[in-house]
Length: 390
Image 1 (cartoon, one colour):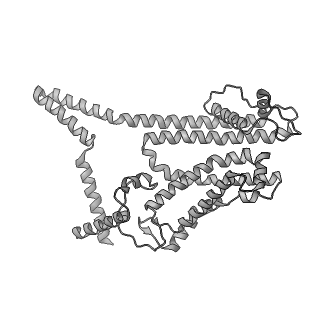
Image 2 (tube, helix red, strand yellow):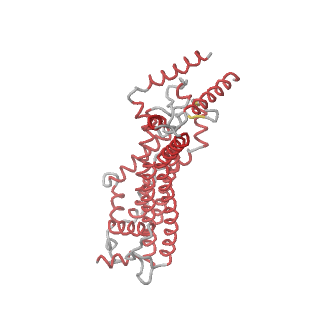
Image 3 (cartoon, one colour):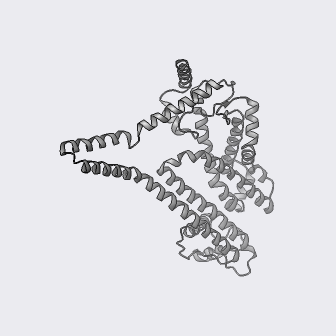
């Protein structure tokens, strides 16, 4: 029975290798946003329909990374477009002209099409149920997707840019800009897929820095939106946008909508303020003056303190993880030396014991292989008994 089961498992592995070329195995393991180790169901030949996609196939891995890049693009550009570009006169003229005048609209349309294609692909992608069985039936896949991420993916795929054309009112433009931020819901799904890289210290540090920069970018967009909304209603021009216009010599002329600082000046200044607030530097050359700006600054300081705690906690954990192996090595070596000193072992044998310990540590890294083999045998016996009971 064991030999037969081994042949079946080998047959499943051969099937998987026949679907994927051997040189692509390391690349597939890196690209895959799923589990790092191939589970048992990946070593078996599943029975699927012609147009069904395996969730661990190379195509699905590459497609997930493509959608990840598009989500990152959306997370960066959607708040920027909603805050800075929707109310800009030059950008509005480009949108009224059509897709030929605004390359950004063409890119947004392509992103929307890719998100719609992703929804169709998810309707044909297998999944693993609670019993660790691959489900390939189209109806069950559809029901599982409807109960899961369909609503979020559908909202993120709505082409809100098409609704802007022909609507010239500021209220409609603002509403469309707020609706476009619903695309950021896809970041929740991306965060769950990137959780597998949490065991790598460098990847965690890179993710923390990217998250810090992304949150600073979002807060900069909100900071500009607050100043832009308040600016027409202020009796005394004390908002941060008016102070910026005064400091750089580009004052606002309310009869000319194109007057004042450029979008580049406003975005760089807003991003500079959020970074200085989040890092608790606060040079003071860009300061909140109105009540709304002060309340927002308080919220930014609270967010910055939480991010500081999270970043320093992860950095300390990563450093401790890096030096944990060295600490265990020195602790074991100290025990070996105490054993040698207690039993008064002569120098030739003492040197051989230390060399043997260093040699074994190089190969096992302090892991007790006997304990590992016992756990593997116990796991195999449990799986064998479960199959026999079935």
